[in-house]
Length: 80
Image (cartoon, rainbow, N blue to C red; front, side, top):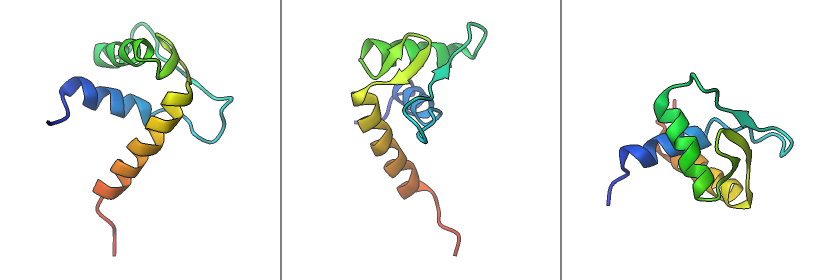
């Protein structure tokens, strides 16, 4: 199974969340890219983020962002 466009958008949105502090969240404005708005709604419905327009990562969201960061790191060419 491949990542769908929807999954790709969701992963990209997850990677936008700040990870330095659990007290920081993200706000998706109504005039943002429609793909971003839809990704936020989907992640909210899945219980990954706290609000349909962003908010904070839930416990599930914190777990998923760790995995997303590992995938991104593994697929990013290293500069030797």
